Amino acid sequence: MSDRTPGIQPHPSLWRRIDIAARHAFPTAATLALMLLASAPLGLPDQAALLPAIALGCVYFWSLFRPAAMPPWSVFLIGLLLDLLGYLPLGAGVLALLVAHGLTIQARRFLARQGFLVVWLGFAALAALVALLIWLAAMALGFRLLPFAPAVFQCALSIALYPLLTVGLQRAHHSIADPEQA
Amino acid sequence: MIRLSVQARQILARLTLPVLIAASFGLMLLGKADALLADRARMVLADALAPINVLLAEPLGAVRATFRDWQDVFSMRAENTRLREENERLRHWQATALALDAENQKLRANLNWMPDPAPAYVTARVVADAGGVYARAVLLALGPNHPITKGQIALDERGLVGRVTEVGSRTARVLLLTDLNSRIPVILETSRARAMLVGTNGPRPRLMYWPEGTLPAEGERVVTSAEANVFPANLPIGVVRYTPSNVPEVEPDAKLDRLEIVRIFDYGLRGITPPDAPARQARPERRR
Image (cartoon, rainbow over all chains, first blue to last red; front, side):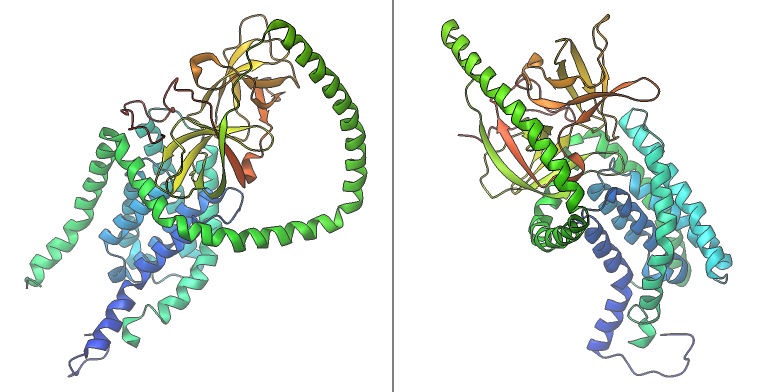
């Protein structure tokens, strides 16, 4: 089980195992649910940019603080939903999120020990990269020039939304998504 | 589960990301090779989400209405004055319109004019924004066995909204005239010059390809043209506005940013299939 509590441990019961599995699945499931919610008719202006912002924020947070619960195939699934719900060319969101996930895992050793501000700065850089990637992919796959302003707005919204997202995710991280508490 | 050695599992874990990144490129190729695939997947997803959207639309609409009511309370006085003035002006126009209508009837009777058939229409509720960062479209909720087909024309109470581009079993997607893929043949009302209305993803589509010598005038009304047999003639679209950099754009009459209910008209026009589907074969007709 965990390295933090060594020693002989009883074989987990069925319910406990289900509990652990559910806690393990929480980050992916919650991200997908949040994305579905963000695509609901909330009537917000420029709501379309909310979807990539939430997807990226969640992928970044969980890749950073609980990578075991945000494996690459989860990121793939989230990216696919982003492409379908966000009417992006198929594969654009998937690629951008997978690259973001990979970079976050690489920077994890450094970033996970830092304070919130540095984590946020890291996220800002990543959000810029992701917005750029999606913009480039949409242009390459659509064979047309696209205005750059929506990409800038998407990046800005992602960065602005991240602290808000962190508040919720941080709570889940220490309670409902924690397999240790099963 | 298969038992693997620690090393093998580590190698596998390290390989997953590159393999999935390669798969995402594969997905891009697949999306390019079969443009229908993504559309179909989206409509299936939209159909599945439709009940949730319809369910959510009610309370969300109530919240928005309450919010608007509160705003109205504060602007009531100014609004009243404005409405009274507008009413005066409209009364004048109503008199003019009635006189013109009577004259028109008389002239038509004299000319044995063949009247246009009244088009059939369906009213539908807009349940979700079906656009993205790089697309402008809305999703309509429909009952099962609805009569809507691709290429039909959506209008709100003021003017043209766009065209139906994808139809699912319970939903239809309407590409707005502001979308990057939207091209609409138009006529400038006073000069009768033809032009194209090209979507830019911004709030105001751009006018292009007007004939040399007739510049679109600021404030001129723009209506659809029957050319290419895609739109009927004379549906109101909007008025010409020039940008500071002197590019003529059209300010749409329809409230495209807050669409709630649209009417889908069937003019029986089968000119060109909607713009996002170049390689698509005709779907079996749903109607009749």
